[in-house]
Image 1: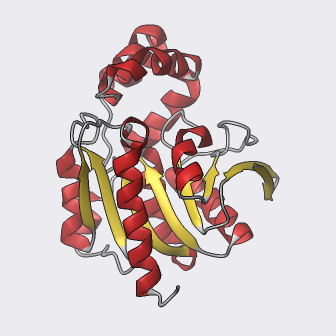
Image 2: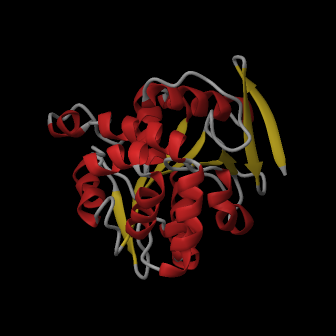
Image 3: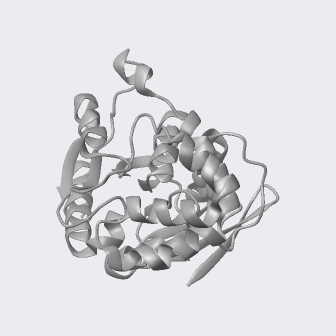
Amino acid sequence: MRLKLLVGNTKISVLKGSDVPIFYIHGSGGDAEIWTKQLEEIGGYAIDLPNHGLSGNAEIRTIDDYAYFVAETIKIVSGKGIVVGHSLGGAIAQKIFLNHRETVLALVLVGTGARLRVLPKVLEGLKEMPSETAKFMADMAFHRKEFVELFAKLFEARAEILLKDLMLCNEFDLLEDYKAGNIKFDVPTLAIVGENDFLTPVKYSQFFTQYGAEVRIIKNAGHMVMLENPEDFNAELRNFIGLVKNSYGKD
């Protein structure tokens, strides 16, 4: 089921599973469909970011802009919820926690980091050699190679928005804010990462444990962990949701 919401003058498209307050945010160049297995088995709402999927266009200058649209979507649907963000979506989730704290019951940071540097060869390659660079990105993103060809074509078709998203990732840097003690998670927070994630390695997720998060490492998966091993990913997410319900005294 698709919801069509209006945030300001921008249409936001949301894929809906069962009616539970979980909000999934996709990564660079992606869309809500990446969360199909989670919507089917756990429920919640997967958001097409502005300029992605079936959502409308909006001027996005920083990750804070994406965070605004997601936070407003959460407010419209349920007021607050568990925010699950992958890669770029994980950066957005951190910004929602910082800028729109009232919407966040809990955080799940998937294959992301406090800083998201992007190889210069990727940024240049998407401009000059989109086909070859899309294949390189797909190779890096997946541990299970049966996904590579499909996503190489997808990344190539979306090279323009992928480049814009990766440029935002490259500018995202909260590392010193964490180290200075300016950021500490005061909501239940889980970091999930694929054992073979080469884009945002395990140490990126382990970093968050110093600031109140727990970490779960998923075997037989790379960066696209929710696609490559949905069974184990969903099990960890389901367990975490149970803990969140208990912490808030809900049945």
